[in-house]
Amino acid sequence: MLRGKKIIVGITGSIAAYKAAVLIRLLVREGAEVKALMTPTAKQFIAPLTLATLCKNPVPVEFFNPENGAWNSHVSLGTWADALVIAPATANTIAKMATGVADNLLLTTYLSARCPVFVAPAMDLDMYNHPSTQYNLDSLKSYGNRIIEPAEGELASGLSGKGRMEEPEKIVEYLSQYFSRKTNLEGKKILVTAGPTIEPIDPVRYISNHSSGRMGYAIAAELHERGAEVYLVSGKTALTPPDGVQTIDVLTADEMYQAATQIFERCDGAVMCAAVADYTPKTAETHKIKKDSSETWSLELAPTQDIAAAIGANKGNRLLVGFALETDNEQVNALSKLEKKNMDFIVLNSLKDKGAGFGTKTNRITILRKDGTQTEFGLKNKTEVAADIADEMEAFWGMDRS
Ligand code: C5P
Image 1 (cartoon, protein in one colour):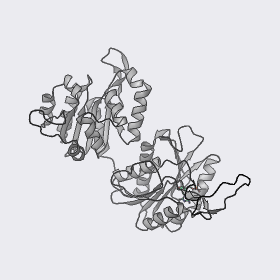
Image 2 (tube, rainbow, N blue to C red):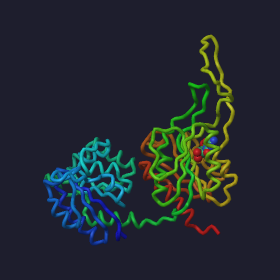
Image 3 (tube, helix red, strand yellow):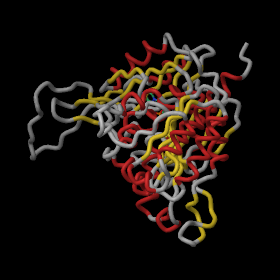
Image 4 (tube, helix red, strand yellow):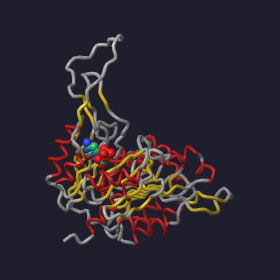
């Protein structure tokens, strides 16, 4: 499974750095092309020569060679690789990765990497359990990085607990499984809507909602990673569009309707994740509305077009996935939307659930299908939730639909 794969192993300053030698050896034995990168502290634990010999490539540590000024390009390393595996990853490097600090070659390579990134933490149990480390690991997950959880057992400090870097054999197994994932999304064209819409009242004010767009962006990134051609129609968010995904920015429900329905004509499926306004001001004033404190003021609203319903109405046997964010009567409301909008399955999240809904990095979902079956998932970060939704889409397309 790893034959021909280009893998960068990034080694940081932990006693577990010696295990990186075994990891590189195993990856090379599997047929992978391996380059190693070390942080300056990692050199105190294991010699670059050992790793260079095992991976048959020089092991850069600095941005340039002080002897001759030759430049070690983090950008070309980051774009070369099919996977970047940081093993061992110290609490220090994890914190820097979480905040975007780029003060060594390994970190700049991480920031430039377009490939999947795997992080195998190694540290003492209290460092691992510290809220800041856990927070940083959650941030890394929310960026789409995959954490290879440390094992429990004896630690270098003499203490015992969770923090031992996972064994090299297990890391290789993890990578092999990742690369052998079944995917039938190759070549599928998929529309994803995400984020809030903004309905102008006048040039200054508008009606909108709390959607951050995170869930839709995570879905777009996951589908792209699985080989789909993704069109992301996005309302206003603070997020950077995922690499390789074609993003169409819109503001209002009407603009989203126009873009989404037009793009869907050439798509095989759609995931409607946007929080679209149900009503919009009947007229948007061209001048700022002046205050008159002596009067109450009412705003006349007109219904917007339901994008999901319009797509559902003429989708044929193409796939339509919807979302339902409910505060009460969750199941009944979600099922009625599923039916009314002719969806194949709907993803329900309840605002009652802690950690689910707007602005959070996590979500807890239930998938309700047209055939009446449903699957409930636990609290996960939005990248993992996106993978569960993508699995469900793969299952839909995996079925014989002739
Ligand atoms: O009816 P409700 O807005 O709760 O339905 C939610 C689902 O419908 C979501 O998938 C949402 O993206 C989609 N929707 C839409 N266009 C609208 C309203 C909702 O696509 N105007």
